[in-house]
Image (cartoon, rainbow, N blue to C red):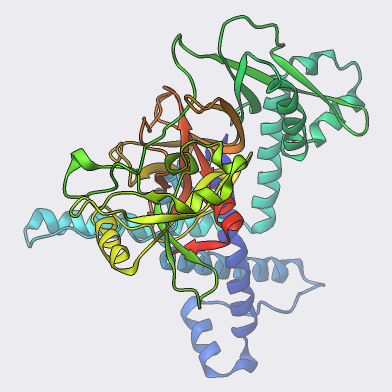
Amino acid sequence: MEKYIGFAIILFLLSVICERVSDFFKHFIDERNGPLSRYLKRIFNIGNTTEKVLNNSVEEDKRYYRILKINIISGTLIAVLLHGDFFNILANLEHPENALSWKDFELKGSGSLGDFFDSSWTIIKFFIGCLITGLFISFGSKFWHDLLDLLFQIKNYRRLLADPETFKIDKTSSLDNALKRFQSDFIKAAFLEAKSKFMAMSNVKAISLKRDNNGYYFELKLKSTKNDISPIYQYVLEDGAIESIRTVFRVMTPGDEIVAHALDLSSRIFDSASPANFGTLGCLVKPLDEDDDRVFILTCCHNVVKPLSLLSSNPSDISTILVGTDVASLNPIGRITMAIRDHEIDAALIDITSDKVKKIQNQVRTIGRPKKVRSLTTGDEGKTKAFLFGAKSKSKKGTVDSLFCDVEINYKGEGMFQINNLIAISNNNAAISDGGDSGSCVLDSNNDVIGLVVAGDSETTYAMPINTILDKFQIQLF
């Protein structure tokens, strides 16, 4: 269903553009606009388009078809300019953001006859696809808007059919009210309520808000199979109506647990020249104040503050901790300037000198320097690829599964601690991080930073949203 909706959205957007362009031509191709308009009128054989012929239905029909001709010409032109040929759109239904793009369009050829025909067919196919797109978007934005409404209704019907509570409804008015409500309207409030209940249970180690073709659901990660939780969570709306949300259970394998992927940075730090010395770097950051020329390494608090009880017992001791090792000289690389572990972040800043900045920055660049910060939305779930950067497990990649995860993390030797609203990442139900990866950046396919790894188990890697950390420390990427 998402593919059909994506297809309709693309054509709806193109049809809106087409209407604006067509409106321009309808008013431009008129006798009073001079010789250019008369020339275009003769080329395209288009007569009057702006004045309705109220008392002559035959002439009005002719005017309608003249307008349709302008719409088709405008639509085809727009499709050509945006590389929105029909075949390219169909090929990118999984990734609709690439449907209007020239980046993969190329003509192959080295001079042979076969290459000439291959290139010619590519061009012919392209223009045929643009003509088909032009015909579709000439239907007008109202057509595609109405179609989208229908598709969203069908999607909502599917959600209701998958909900066992639907079959308990005993009157059509209640069914109508249920159809008018979309899960996105209440699901986050329901999640806030549910997680406060579930995370208080000793058997629940994590809860995530996820989504599939049947709508949103809660995924609970359980320590053991002993479970008396209902597979349906009932949330009471303000009007007294009850919405049912599926609850899916994942039981952790014996011995598996969600642990902080700590690495002691006092022993070593990132060394791009030797894979054996790969450690967690995180990324370079600087203050928001442009007059402040300090540069920091951003990493996890539990990597550098040992023991974590220093955060509460004697915070002033933190600034005395020397951190990291320059592999070449074995000298300390910097000093902790700020460290926070609360229910949103587990992060620290290492103040480093200018000579170290250049060395680390050069090492970062060898595997792709982070470009900018990116905030994820629910549309990224199940689609956005995630890569680890500056980590021991640097070759691993996965997909963002959820943006809302509350996780109870085992800080080995220092007890359990819960961090909320983490990003869940996995690769076919396998984590992409391991011990020593805490503090490493999570990048998308454009090398934009989306988070910082904090913990994981065998199935899932958990990362803190980068914007949460930057806001709390009042810093930006270097």
